[in-house]
Image 1 (spheres, rainbow, N blue to C red):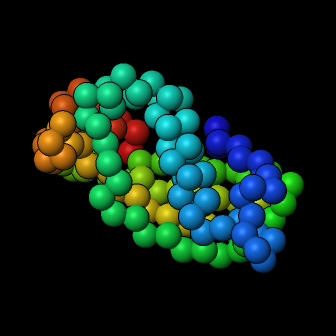
Image 2 (image 1 turned 135 degrees about the vertical axis):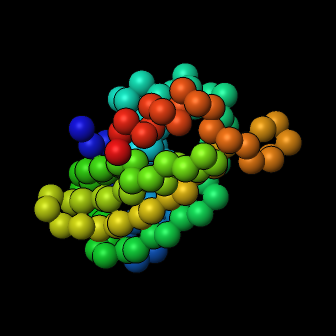
Image 3 (image 1 turned 120 degrees about the vertical axis):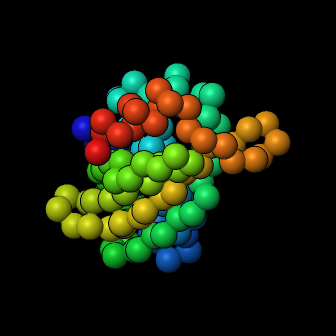
Length: 126
């Protein structure tokens, strides 16, 4: 089930469309929605995932009052990272395609291996 984001006035820039930085917030909210749907939130608490890399392609500007559908899926899992693909659609029009690399970090910001239960759960999502 996609995450639904309604575009409000405060999401817009001076040109009347969604500011590029806002899309990052939309994607973050959609990732946590996805993790909650897949019952991964408890496992993720121990991992303290951070965005290590983000590749985003803007295809269509979103505007006021549009209802955006954000789809998230895990496309790869390695011992120290989870890679998700996210797409944002308005009706059937692709607005954004993003690939996000998430890495687990400890309290000092050092990357470590994914906990085994999280690794296995993510593998099952492929």
